[in-house]
Image (cartoon, rainbow, N blue to C red):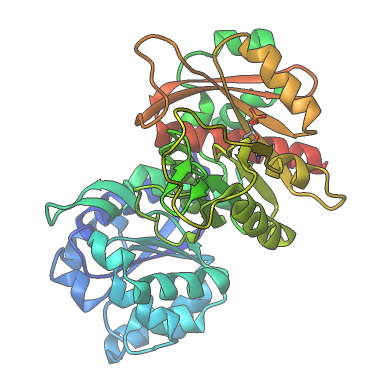
Length: 437
Ligand code: C5P
């Protein structure tokens, strides 16, 4: 597999414990055919030695901006011109800050400023640092300037905490880079990637194995995605409401996976007890009508709308201004229909690619396809709910059957919601590309 054949890549390594993985990353890039030159910051050299990277890449490692010997060999301007792509892994919080603000106070930041190469960043830091608004703003600035962010991943961190901030594994970074740079003709990966394109109802039943989508994520770079998540809350009086059991986990998992695949994400959510994934623009709402308004405000810039929220179908007609006192033995609440947010977006003349969710207890395909047609959607993802031992609400796992026009179908096997989310996005990305042709 020489998918990176002849690509000249500057691998920048900044200071962080994840820099030990960069040695493996350098090898993986070379295995894929890339020419790799390494720049290490002084922080990186506290974790691994230039000698390791020199031995692995077969090239001298660049460390100093103001080193006459190094400048005489391959100076910073030559290095900046040489690179087709600059990949910085790990990208520390400090490095993101210096890049975002145009600093040129060491060799790596200077080369980045002096180069026209495309910039890829694999952040790695403690989860609280990654959530910090200063870091998020820097990351967003860099994205807006055209950089691509790979990760960070979620999981156990070197500091012992668990959350988003881990550097992605070297193989995942290599695969994402290959996806971004395009795949050479004759490369096996192309077959793997396009195989599910023709997924028909019959083929997909054989595709219950972990599918190609699960391992090779396509890129959503540059796309704006609006996602709704969680329940809505419909007030009865100042202290009571009607709602449902949606945890928001599926919508949040999709938001997080979309960020990892390079999208800009606006997440409009009802009340949930979940942390906002890094780089996601979160808008908190309560009622279906609030959610509708937030969606309409954000849809004009959206390429894709994924409606995961469990929107209450009805709301109370007259919300009591004061707490309702109990008096009669029984009482009746008058309900009126809420707007169908998804259908209203799908009916717009200039509409994004619209994806709905359907939770069904029986006749899943029939009901899901019914909603696909009735709401005029591009795609619908159906959960089979209410089966013994298979709770969807609040669970960390899920499986989906995804349907689209002309008998299009893909089964996503039971897995953690974050994997299911990534696989769903791959299908969306592929159908979106198809629909634009
Ligand atoms: O018709 P049903 O509620 O089963 O459709 C589910 C899909 O429609 C989901 O994608 C849900 O987010 C969306 N929906 C909506 N507004 C409503 C009801 C459902 O956007 N009022």
